[in-house]
Length: 160
Image (cartoon, rainbow, N blue to C red; front, top):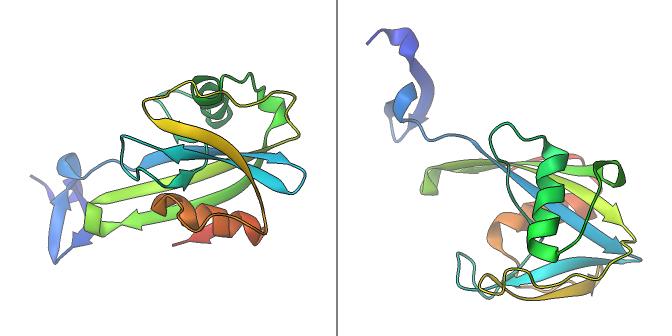
């Protein structure tokens, strides 16, 4: 195989061929904001069970970022969110070489929703609850810690 077919991705001193390198994944999260509080869900029966996380999920192939957030809001919260209601608030590079993962998290904010969250995926979410920004729970879903920190610091981009 020609040298140009390899990615310059070095992990543990080995070069990974392009066709075997894991893809970069895109996570789309939603900050649902009411006054000085944000909505978090308690995860269950999945990675990070028992921790609090933002609503959201993975970007699907050929899907716009805002459409992914709107889809996830409907799937997880039973809410109709329109793209024009969203404001991008955070981009986080989440490099996880120990897990052989690379995520880019792109988060949007929705202020003062006119709906209440519903548990649409009871097998994956125990509850939805609003937390004051100055009184957030300590047991965050680990991949969302940087996203929350970035949001609270009002930074658009964070390299982890």
